[in-house]
Length: 312
Ligand code: NCD
Image 1 (spheres, rainbow, N blue to C red):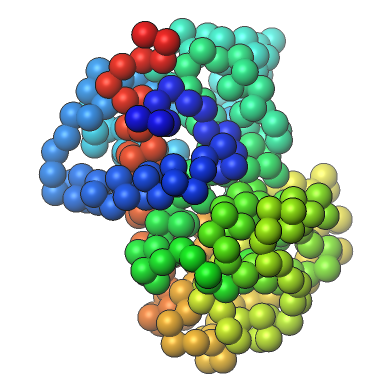
Image 2 (image 1 turned 90 degrees about the vertical axis):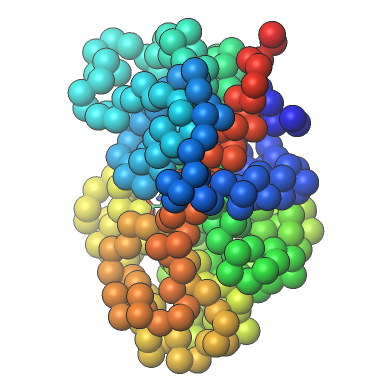
């Protein structure tokens, strides 16, 4: 049980072998996630869902995973209604939650919040998105989707499209792709390029990375097109947002140039960058991707919580 008792803050906290092991377990858990088999793997476990930023898919897929495995959740899901609005700080909240629950799933607007929480908590902390930082469980579901649809994770050509500056889903996925010898093509409006430091880290880890702002050229040889929305909430004011937003649109016309087997992914929500007509094409896998969040989170929680608690 190598993941037992561990925190999962960044996808880089997991080795290639550990990622594969979670994906293998997740595949076996698909019938449980579909509700076709019953399980009590998390019976008696209480998991805190501390969401200090809006979330639909991530929180609900975590909760679905916990309930379907017989566990229970303690949920904070209204950032404006919880006690952080009073004088509580994150440190105190995490100390408290770690005495109420067996693990903490945290989403927070500040990059680094999950790392701080992991240092504070004596229970495992799973990062469900920390500002513009990382989103490791999204990455695990992305990898599960790629593996299921294309049969492999190795040696693929993956286009990351959209807001590569603020998008934590792509920041996290890029690190994972580096572990699997993929070629990463970065395609973004110029104001949304991948942060230089992240790009340097990827190159340092041996990833093949190149930039291709022209979407038509970028997808020509691609196996995966990973579309993201502009992260509007990261802008300090609406005027700045309006000045930098450039159009990029994935529709049936763009995909006519792609390989027949290209898969189109999106962490969702979409906000106009991915046309509904794409849903009808064989390229579209984003709803399957959303579903696979459940078995992947089942596998991760089971591995982290295991049959006994950390330190005893
Ligand atoms: C992503 C996120 O929150 O970072 N969404 C998600 O978890 N499904 C991507 C996004 O919000 O654009």
